[in-house]
Length: 295
Image 1 (tube, rainbow, N blue to C red):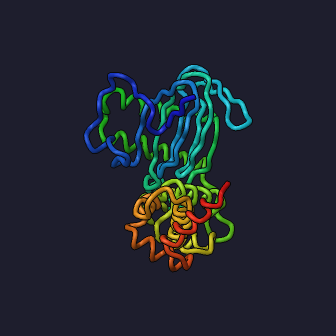
Image 2: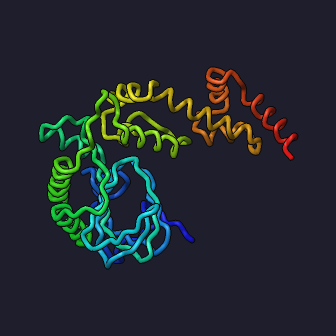
Image 3: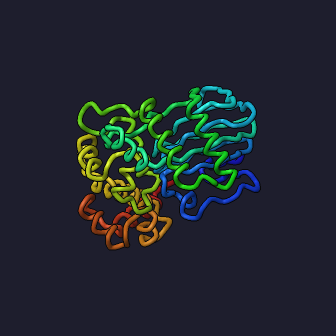
């Protein structure tokens, strides 16, 4: 059974005219909003965690599917809200066509400031198969603009994006934290994102975008929730993964350093000595010793 990534293994309408360069191209368009008409074939669909919030509006014939132990039926107009940093996997029995809107956390933050909401609370809660005529109307308006080659330009696109952001913040805001730290869903999202992209450059801004807060606020909230500064948490997770890979003994230390996000092998060694009191060489030796005694 093939697995499709909804974020990449999809197709847009054939013949759609491209928009103005710099406005709609790239992962973070200038207006903070991207629209695509996407189609997936029947089978397993994987939704990978992204820094952007995703609004998915079912746009085609009914689709039957299974998510964990539940069965569902998508019908035209069903809306899914997937917050930044959230991933999911499900199975669909039919071809699925949807309008997918990617909304950057920065757009929600700007909108929150404009309407008098604390921008550090400008997140969204996950929702599945809700009926929302306003989101559906805005999604189709954005899709029509894309298909026509964006004749309205930046001003019209920004007005639609602002209307969508205001509606989302008003109707589907993320729950406020109760202990002065990240909410449980926020903490799960950011730690899951760290695990998935541990080998990449996890800047504070990138992680803050996942939960929709400012980088300075994330530093405070993350430490209150986890007991560790966010940078130290990332380093410890990298050390733990590197330890596991070194004990396996099937790749050199230099490769392990790259695969776990360290700048270089010496950087990995310094962090290991500080956190574990061990060196990469000693862990590789221990792994070889264990392998010798395995039946």
